Length: 372
Image (cartoon, rainbow, N blue to C red; front, side, top):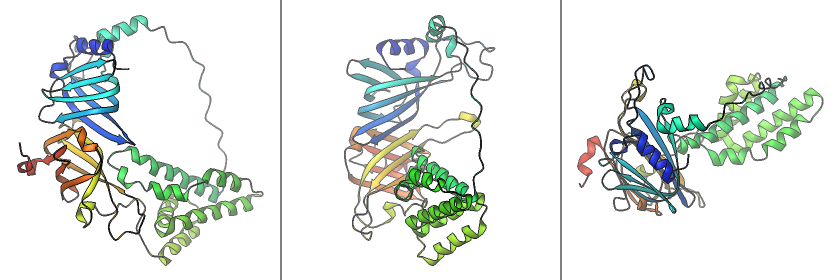
């Protein structure tokens, strides 16, 4: 629901916002705009009996606030207790702790509270929501058809390619998705599949799908050919075809699987500049019955290595840190490329300083980097 003055008033009535704690914060650049999400652990102000919530602490609830067109970020993990919502005609401002703040053009809040129906807002919703109308039974599953071996192989490859591309929405894996390669290889796949499927009889159709897979393999080069062989190893009923693909990959120069990331930029010589694309903070917690240390995740866009070919695009690099001593973030961290001081140990962040401290992360072991 949209964060309006009425929504803010309702949240303040149902939850103890002065004692709320930041569970997580992430801010991400999307084009020229900043988006993000703030997750708060809050105590309930309304009564909950044990029978209503036998397996849940009465003060356990979460508010997730999604922010669009963020104009101000000021956050310090050492000052992350207590929030105040201040929506107005120009957007929403969220005070965090004594000095922190987030401001965005729009904000939507989603309570994750199994007892929300007992809150003041929940009771008002029950009183005004009309009874649920009966709905027709859902239609049965689509009728299945029998695909030939190569048609099934082509369908399997497209399915796996789409899954690979979707990993960009998982922050920990975004830098690993070979989106550019897959986009180039599978461009026009829809029309190509329809054309192959239009052949008659069955043998000609199967030959068309085999040629289509071979075309994809040629476009992708040895690296993608090996990836195709790995995918088809499990599903393809033509082991000789998979073996042929692997032989083609061996005959060319091996360049590694498409999902394999390049070396981290701060382990290489070259331009020290980078551009922050995402910063994420997660507080220590015991959700799901397991203790998790506090953590940070950053995505940096970095220029190509000096030895790369001319015209090589910038790359996305990701690194994570756990057991934080401190996480500080200000809006200026996202304002263009700048010099980043980054310390990495076994692919884990130990210390990050970007744009004069606009992003400053220190792990527990390296707390001495913290100037304050």
